Amino acid sequence: MKHTLAPQQYAILFTTMFTAGVGDTLLSHGMSQVGSVDLHHLTLLLSAIRNPWVIAGILMLIGFFASYLTALSWADLTFVLPATSFSYVVIALLSHFWLHEHISLARWSGIVLIVLGVGFVSQGPALTEHTATEANAA
Amino acid sequence: MTPLNMVHLWTSIIVVAVCSVTGDVLTARAMRRVGDLDEIRAKSGLPGAIRAVLSEPAFPLGVLALAVSFFSLLYALAPPAPVSLIGPATASLTFVGNAIVARTFLNENVDRRRWISVLVVALGIYLIAN
Image (tube, rainbow over all chains, first blue to last red; front, side, top):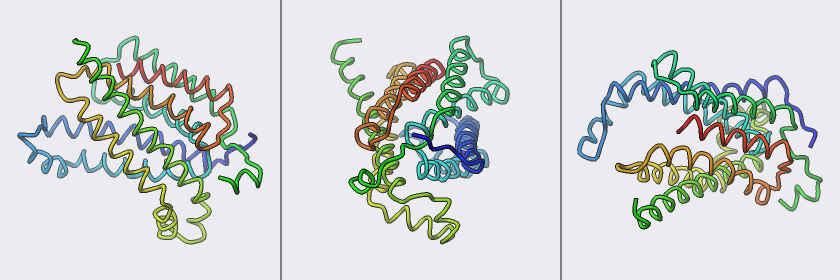
């Protein structure tokens, strides 16, 4: 394994982390305005998809899926998943500073662990290099 | 919680994790066969890139498995399920499961650095989601 990433590919990974974290937070904020949706109040879903925060969240998550697929086209799954899990940290920080949710000591510990894990995996190669025979067999 | 409820709870968690791993691995396999999307987009534009992804059979199967995983999670989270256990457990199991299956099914070289990263991040996700 000796594959390294170009700056443009790091930008794709950053976009994946950012759009996943911001998209989930926007959806959460929008759904808190819509109210509780259950089987007896499914019509609330219609008002949910007219909520600007929900629309923005969905657009962000479409952007996430596009950049996630792009990253998987040139990097291993076991590289992309830990590297993009930084989105959990983005969600926690946005929840704290924008939605004013409480972050416990356990959650701060989780944030530190994810940062360490992401930093550690990003120092390694992004893609397993296979020989031509192996690639043809796959 | 009765033993029957425990079996139901952990069956739900495992079903969500298995579907999620299946979806992630099939999607990754499809993208590996498609090749570098940046290059395809440069040659054939965005429509060409979308065509290349959609023409790969593993892609719709992967998306289907991810959709089943999503709706299984919604079912598993229905009250009075312990959300504080189901969320972190499914996320962490999916993470570790992906590493195991990627090694065998995608032939990825999951070396010591990746194993440590996967386990550290899985523990971090567990703490954040709990």
